[in-house]
Length: 106
Image (cartoon, rainbow, N blue to C red; front, side, top):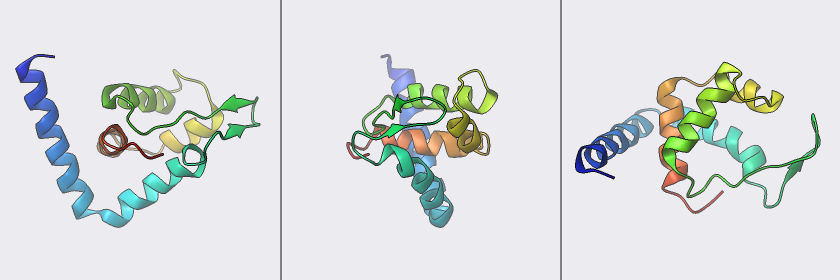
């Protein structure tokens, strides 16, 4: 990873932290939606098919952003995730990705 990219990520994380402090209730609500499935150890969904729900903590932030954007657009297919990601803004996606990338939990 090069220095400009690292600086960009640090700036983004700072902006995400500031945003989360400005709207903590909203962020907690969005995070709770994620944890409804991803926060349960070894959880498997039964709809539309049996699917092991992945752990979000310590995932790469860029991967999480791309996955949520793809669920939101319909490029990735999962009805539950489309319903959740479909309502997320780009800022909310970035905030959630940064949170989970920096967290071992969930």
